[in-house]
Length: 387
Image 1 (cartoon, rainbow, N blue to C red):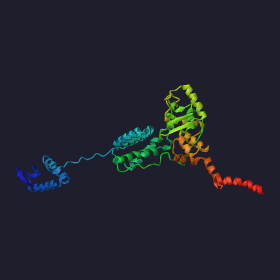
Image 2 (image 1 turned 60 degrees about the vertical axis):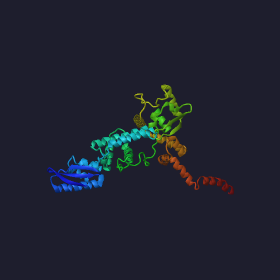
Image 3 (image 1 turned 30 degrees about the vertical axis):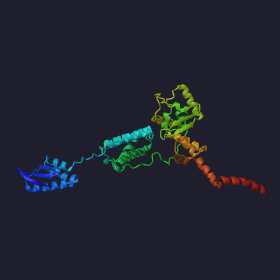
Image 4 (image 1 turned 135 degrees about the vertical axis):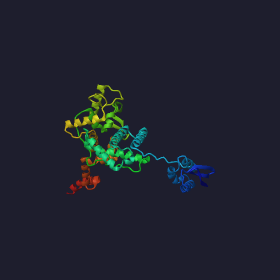
């Protein structure tokens, strides 16, 4: 129980709280004001540290009085938690990617591509003066897409800025990580379709001139990233096979070497006498290992000379897959050669092979499938005999 007592001209609060004697100034000369303050103090002390009175009492009581009473009740001012920022999220996601790569669940090429999107989004937010994740709402992300498309189209090989779907997918994954780590509660990124999923375009096979890069892409179906990193140690001349662990899916592929490609590889090996760790494809200008952008540019130039538009490296992969299917290879076999899934082969290649559709048409027109065709063939001599 506490009471007010005047000392000099200022009123004080005195009494025992929890067995401890308290004598503190109320900072007022008015008796009524002192009684009201004492009532509020006693209410706050009785309610304990959870009382809402403490926040206001902190601004009313003298600076020397409030800490004594607050400590008695066990009240501590709550520090406002700083709002998470984009820098915090991008740093956390970079660490997350490092973990995934160490566990073998994310390829270094994938990490590089993710970092490219992170750099672009960081530049965009910096230009807009946006730092907090709370300010990265859906309109901001949609504005980034427009900004990003404009930047892509300024480049020489923009390809219609179709890579914006991949940028959106990367950002969507990053903000999913933010949800998992409780930095945000909602993903502001709207996907732009599945990256690479354009079934209306389908496979785009083509043929062109004789170059080592062309032959390697044409007769192996390797992705550009795998082609430029292929080493001589992965080429087994004795078995006439290429054995490689693919970057994207981390699948081991064993590819028979086509005769034409075999001649080109043997000639190149004899000319260079390379070490096993050296890359197969070199930049013809510098002699350094060929990089993926340079391979892309080289194939476009090759296609231009051959009169084939948009001759990017992936079209060789299309050609390889379509040729196998046309030759009668099963979807499972093609998937194994491409180090891809059966579903992907069925979706992206099978619908665009005329030979497969024609084969199905012949079976359907036979009436009862293969058995019906066989039965009708056996019936013809019988009819001739009756006549």
